Figure 1 (spheres, helix red, strand yellow):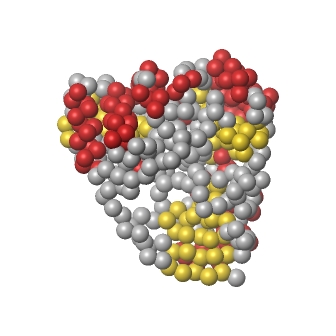
Figure 2 (cartoon, helix red, strand yellow):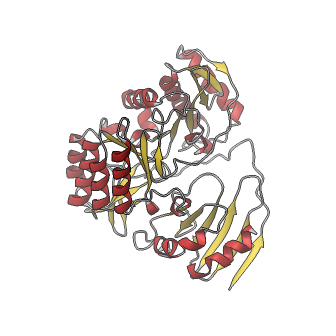
Figure 3 (cartoon, one colour):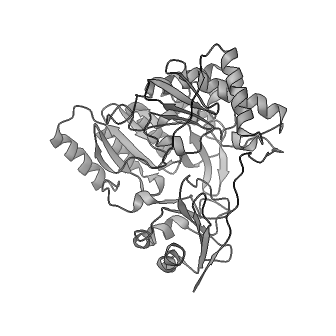
Amino acid sequence: MLAAVSTPAVPSSPQATAVSRNRGDACPGTLRLHAADDGALARVRLPGGVLTVRQARALGEAARLLGDGDLHLTSRGNVQLRGLDGGCGAELAALLGAAGLLPSPEHERVRNVVASPLSGLDGRGLCDVRPWLTGLDAALCASGRARELSGRFLFALDDGRGDVGGLGADVTLRATDDGGAWLGPGGVRVSAQDAPRAALVAAETFLDAARETTGRAWRISELGLPQEELADRVRRGLTAAGIAHEERTGSTARTDGPAPGVTGGALCAHIPLGRLSAGQWSTLTAVADDELRLTPWRGVVVPVPGRSPARVAESLARLSAAGLVTDPDSPWPRVGACVGHPGCAKSHSDVRADAAYALDAARLSPLPLYWSGCERRCGRPHGDRIDVVAAEGGGYRLTTARPGREPRTAATTDASHLAAALAAITS
């Protein structure tokens, strides 16, 4: 029924492997739709996952009028609209532009920014990263060079708690306990005021290095440069831009998001497999006062500062009744999946249905599970996990992914045997 084997780990290298792309970046956006099996797909960038209630309603309206009605959250806190007519681009752009969701059409695919979703709400971070977020987004949209960035290039703004600092971003700002910001790549401390501009310098340094080395790279990991060489380039760029800096060692980071429930001045809910129906989205906008914050872990944070305990409890109950996960003991936050069949032609299985079917087995796993319809494993998270990948001939292959440890694998004929396969590779 299943077989479990161990395979040696691939040794890590301090120098990334150079990648030279032989085609342009086809990453979808709002103005560049992607043809999928269930219709055209649009990816709407939301820096920091932040949406005003008005913008959230506009997105819901776009999904209802032009797509399948649902909103699909990504691992970067963005939103995808699916089931679109391929000729709806102009109407979609007009609808979202009127809501302020397209501040610069030329930069709409490069506004990939994740930020600590509870920053400024629960008192745990070292600073509120919102000024960095608005400052970086404005700097990106004002930079002619930033238009050259790939739609896959990622910025992370961490308020010091270490949540988004572990998501494998290309450029990271992390608050320091002396009121400044650590910048990577570069390994330097800059002032909080200079942080957004320093992040843009690091991105532009990447563009220069890509032009000189591979000729075409989408992520910093594809440059093939030793880390210290890239850091030196970033430091020289900061000096040329007049940004004071000093070398500083970075700290460790996690990859876990807010637990469902009430945290400080916020309601936190997880979205099973990242898919929100029109009704669920409507409930979210009704519960929110001013804004929503979508998280890279396919969750939603609703700021509720000053709201009475009774009203907080009522709001949380409304989210739960709508099918959002508000129980911190639920296994759903530990289960993710790509869109799978029938939305993707490359998928070998309906992985979302199988993930839901095998949810009870997932409770037994010591590691989070990520289900993928094929070997591309689109949207797979960073950090320790078990990859559950559909096989072309049927069934699934499970592989532990823990940096620095040998992966273990098992094969199972179908989702009903998941518990046995998990036991084989985690015991």
